[in-house]
Length: 261
Image 1 (cartoon, rainbow, N blue to C red):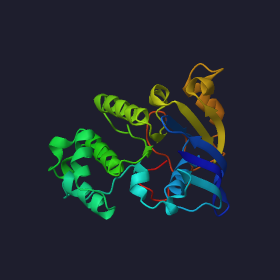
Image 2: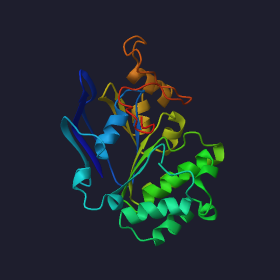
Image 3: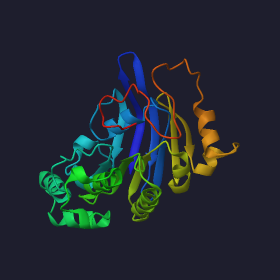
């Protein structure tokens, strides 16, 4: 389980996350939504121990990331930019991560097969398509067989076949009883896969509930999203706007985090 309680993070005069509270539960896909600059990136960074909170807590299984005895077995994160050296093979890349985390070497082959990269285990990462890279990142996140998965834009750049596969695999992870927190701006995908939605804007929670609950009173979930996060274009100049077709605007909390939004 992921528990965010009163989380606040400031950068100088800018409050990136402002008293945010929500829970992502086991057996569910929780969609984490918001415009560029809404605070999603900062929330994920604090959750994964990459940044500190000014107030509040971000807990994984009741503990802060820094308190986890074996983090790789508790939480896995699939973020843009997996850090794999292009000259390494997929197997060598995962083998290095396994050794660094004290995980059995046998997990490398298991996760490669699980994400459909078994036949590409000895291929150099530089030869991988974007979709294969996404699968490799997911394999790395699953090495420790964690109960919590944090996924950032898992279908970004994938072709229709890849999107369909990722959708089914993400659903499978939740059906196995894992907690899946999925950050995305693809509203159509979120509506098809998420059990629970958390919508944030300007660092604050603006809506939470099942997709049909969030969309209630609106023609679609997308319409509900825009109504909940509507802001004058000049109010946050330079922070970007949410783009349903993809692409990343500048975000005040994007501080070199490999594309986490």
